[in-house]
Length: 555
Image (cartoon, helix red, strand yellow):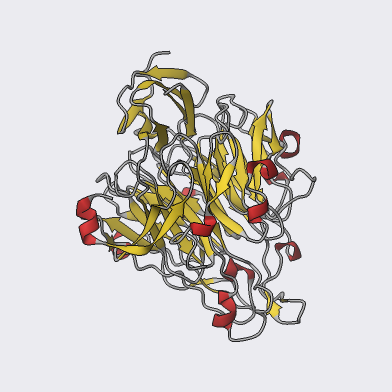
């Protein structure tokens, strides 16, 4: 964070430490307070433990008004009674970043104060006019907001053709048919009956397992290019199966130039929708090795992240799970995925926690992907069944976790000294990454169930060099979601995909970020655009943000 910003904010004393890669005892993250972001997630407890209460809410990081600064958006919840649909409480909150690094609550003037029972959020340019629009997923009717370019939004749901009234969790924008228009993939959870009550072993009311309720099919809306969308869920094959969907990530998992979709399902086999290139998908999770874990068991998948953790040039997958399961790292090998959780060092440390939001990113710019996990239980800890609701709620809290990668697919657990990121324990849910202060590294935004938002500034010392890349199309007036960026530097090839919707209920900043280690120059950058065309760009200088434009590179 710049000196100017530091003078205007208070950096919390608690800090995140690590003890590897030359950072023994060094501060990696500091919590930034007094930024003007005062959002607290609202859940009106009813005492009947309806499932939406414990699932948290999402966040988005994006430049809403085109001033070059990243703004923040948070969904909010409300109340679930046994005899009526969920109702929103406080409206969603939108904060504009100011020149001094603080944020101003601009909810009212922006028009983004959606009052539904908020869950996930996605950001993308639906009309190719050069500004970012917002899709809000609710437990109940979803909402689509169109940006006028100045950070003022209009709710266009009724005229858009979007008719989504199920329990939406995560949402992703993607151009599934490569026609230049962003489509919308909506992940649905369960057909929740708030009258259904469940109990712990001691007989105290508690939150039901999602297996108590029927799962729901997901939805795919095709952008018709005229401001409206067509529900093609059935025609595409997406609606042929129903499950308990929570997380989503979009990437080209088979490297054919067409975008595929991974859905993390809660307690059921995950779905990997492979693009058939004809506006249909086939479900290949079992064939490709990501449906279940190494023991053939479906897990309670919540959050999902993708990245090349072992530096072999392809995309690996990481998913967070329920306590007494392990989080799972799926390594891409020979065109399929294998469960590498135990050998990676990520399995055992996760057994005692319930993971939700997660992110693969290079904290210290050594060229290796690191991992952050937002934890929080969905059932109270042992012995917490008695007492007032607020006291019991604290027994859902867990510390978050941080792992540092070595670039070979193994990770070192640094959670025990995590300080600000792991303390205090909270019921954490959504986790987003972004270079909030434009200093070259990635910072964190975290939401907490029935708690306040936390913002963490990356202050790791002795960082390596870095590069950030915006992959754009002038004709579309936007960044190209699904573009795969390769950076050649220091004898290594680093790969990232423009895919901001990932983690859990989250939309992160869309600019791709690369840690380059000791490399002082870049040999070249390449972009594989949707459709498969590869272009090479002459980029040499490190420690900068570059824009690579489709059609301006060498083929």
